[in-house]
Image 1 (cartoon, rainbow, N blue to C red):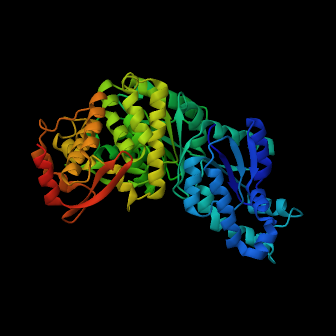
Image 2 (spheres, rainbow, N blue to C red):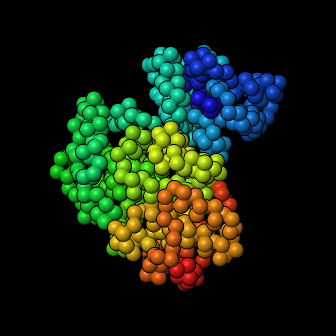
Image 3 (cartoon, rainbow, N blue to C red):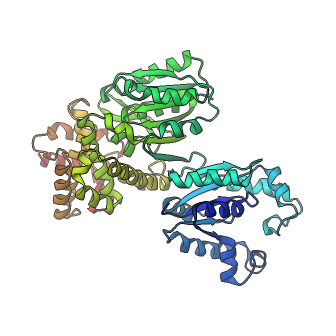
Length: 525
C-alpha cells in the first residue's frame, strides 16, 4: 500500500476513530488533519473559525493536505468534513491516494454530535436542520471516492476492516459526482467484487458474445447465484460488424420479456463491442438502468469499459449513436486475458501506446523496455499496464466527463483510425490495428504541421513495430478512408479538432479545416 489513505466524510462519522484502527492494522502512521492545522496555526479549530472564518480555516486545511499529497508513504489521514469540497484538491487526492467516505444518517450524526467537542458549523439554533442542509450540499463531493461505507449500527472495528480492504486492493476511482465508481484490477477478482456491486438488483441481464460466454460466463453466473440471483443470459454474435441497433434490440426485447424493470442491472462480459453495446442498452432501457462492465480483453480494459461512452455504429459512422452512461463499477480480471486471441491482444497494445503518449512517460519507457514480456502476456507486467492506462483515463474523464474539452485528447490516432476501420467494413482491420495506423497518421500529420518532432515519430513507430503493431500506411486505402473523416464525431461544421503529440505525455487539440485534414491524410499514401 504505497499511497496515502484519506478517510473522508461528514463530522461525527468516526473518521479519526476508524483511521487510528486502520493505521494500527497496517502498521502505518496516523494523521488527523485538524490536529495538523491546529499545531501549525497555534489555534484550535473553533478559534480559527472565530478569528479567520471558514475561508481562512479552509485555506490552512488545503495547505496541510497538499503537503500530505506529496508523500507516497503509508499514512492514514482522517480529513475534516470539508477538506475535499474544492474539486481540484479532491481530484488530486483521488489520483494520488485512496479516498474512502464514511457516511451516516442525519439522526445518527445528531446523536453522535450531542455532548461531543464543539463543532463550529453546528453552533446554530437548529443543528439538526443544519446537518441535513450540509449533507445535501456536500453529497456530490462525498460521492467522489474509491468507496463509500455506511457506518450506522456498525462497530468501528468492522468499519476499519472494510476500509483496510479497500486500501489493500487499491481500486482506481472515476469521479463523476453521484455517478462515481471504482475500477478493480487483479487476478480472479470477478467472484470477489461482483457481489458487492450488484446491490439490490431484482433482475440481472448478462450480456456476452459467442466467443466469451463459453469461457467465462459460468464464473459470473456463480457469483450472481451466491447473491441469490439467476441471470438472464443474452449471447450476441461477435465482431464490430454486429455493433448495430438491431443487436441492441435483442437485449431490450430479452430484458422486457423477462420482466426487467428500472431496478434491474445489466452486466457486460466481453470485449469493447460487448461493453459498448451493453452500456448503451442500459442507458436506453426504461430510460436508464444500472450496468457493470466486466471487460475480458486488453482493449476493453484499457479503453472501452471506463469513461461511460456507450454506443453503436451507424452505416459507415463509428459510434455515431450512443450516450454517456457511467457504469456502477468495472472489474478487470487479468485471468481473462489468457484466453484472448493473439491478434486481438497484440492489436490492443495500440491503445496502450496511445495512452502512454497522452499522459504517462513511465508507461512509454516500460513498453519500450518490456516488449518481449508484454507480447508473451506476463501477468504482472500486463496488470501494471492495465492499471496505468486506466489511471490516465480516469484522471482525464474525472476532469471532463462529457468531452467538452480535455477528454478529446483520448482520440489521438482515432480520426484516421476510425476512417480506416470503417472503410474496411469493420472486418478488414481490428480496432487496435486501425488505431495503430491512425497513430502513425496523427504523428506524421503533426510532423507536417511542424508540431510533432521527428524523433518522437521515429520512437513511437519503433515501439509500435516492436509490439507487433502495423505501421505501414502506404499499403492502406487512405484515399478512400480520407473521404470518411467527415463522419468523425469531433467535427463541427467544416472544421475538426485533431489531436497531435508534441512529446511523450504532451498532446494537444488543433483546429483544422476538414479539407485540409483530408488532404494531409491522402498525402500520407
